[in-house]
Length: 98
Image (cartoon, rainbow, N blue to C red; front, side):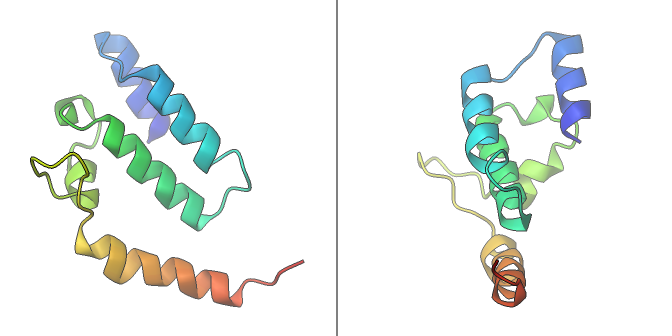
């Protein structure tokens, strides 16, 4: 999905702010990738595309993650807090610590 998005952005010369994408990737994925980190990465990348949904390969992904509002901070959809968050917690509770 990320490669398809990058390909589309480069082909149409409509690239999201690179500095924000780099920070999202470095802070969420390069440090011990996990289900929670992948979820955080998707959320951070979707924030970068706020107002640019039409550039997304899967524009519905933004609406899956966030409820658009006029507020500076985007409210996450209930699926993030009621389903995905508990799944991540369940995984973390049963993951062995070394």
